[in-house]
Length: 232
Length: 340
Image (tube, rainbow over all chains, first blue to last red; front, top):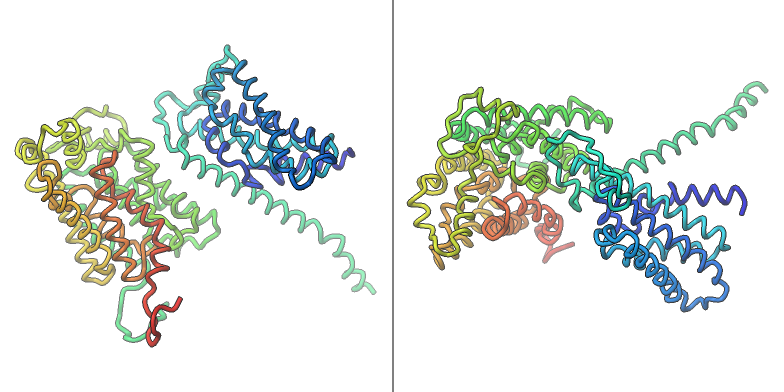
């Protein structure tokens, strides 16, 4: 894998084709578990693990899987991996496992995983596919972390609620004063939709600005031509 | 700028003229309200108006729209007034500010500003706040509470503690709670006879506020700023369903008069469902819109968990307004049947 390929894959995963902000895939777990940073990040980590392993498995087997039945085969691979992750969570982070509940097994049906397997791993070598799985997952991770932080801050005035479920020694940070009444809408599903909409708008605005800047920088090479003509 | 077919009668058509008259029509209701709870409501109106104008100006600037033209149209003021009138009068200042910001920034400008919002901004603000701050949003001043302006200001600004006298329920809410707690043992006649919160027919004082809105609404209709369809259908639905249940079981369902003059019925009928942007535009559509909103409002306020159902009913109907409009296009003159 060349450096260029790596940069492209990383850029696609983290920003350009960001699963939540660019492709709008897997919104169900995104909206359901982003009530705080800890839940969001832990589910994203589980998804990263599944995506990286699923991508490497599918990429290695891509020449042996009959084209017609590829989707069932992909799902079987993903389901096996999710079962592993599910058992891992249950054994090691039981409290968090209870909180995340159905959304860990539901990673199987998360369209991001199947989309990456089908769109990328089935057509690319294992190393590229692994990197793609990891970076797509990292893109999901930062989106979930930012969305979770905004919802948590708005809804309860705290950050890192439930951190003690992952690191027993730590406790949540009270950012806003104790008397903050808590804008409950932030924690409810409509708040998640509104804030996600704002994040998508922000990404589109950044992209539009970058495109404009690129356009403004592009003309100079073309500009000398008229002056040369004028000189002649 | 007016482009209209004959007859060329002089009509108040500009947005700012319409909005000014809507504000004028609200004044009888506001006057009764101020007489009932004191100057607190005027303070809330000022807070809401200032917030709305500031938010409107900020959003217009962000969106690169001409400031003076849109700011002077008065639509933000109408939204602000409706918010102040639907929130509890002694709510802390930040509650009204939050609601107004939510209405102007999210419900209005993020959807494209004046004329583009699919939902009534004031009702979005009410729904967002009652979902987020259910306790504060159901604390209404007790009956006959007399407080000087300074004390009321202190409560609104959070300088004085929120005492129990401030945390009554609306007659509508009180009746629902009493019926629920009574478990069928208490009937309405008993409630009405023994508690003076219910006043002559709907709620002490509140019935006069509702009557004020009704007067203002009738004036709007006389001025041809609203058509009769939506308000009449809304009130008819309210009367029909509450009347039917009342006749069936007068002990556990309040009379139609109670429902007409309590909660947000009158304000909703004349000032909220007649919103030309988020409501229906065809005559038949307005009838369907008003009737369904009245039906939903009754169901939500009587069988639901919230103190009143008008806001949620209006939001649900806002959602269906485009479809209703699509299905009720009037026949084009000279054509047979519907052309779509």
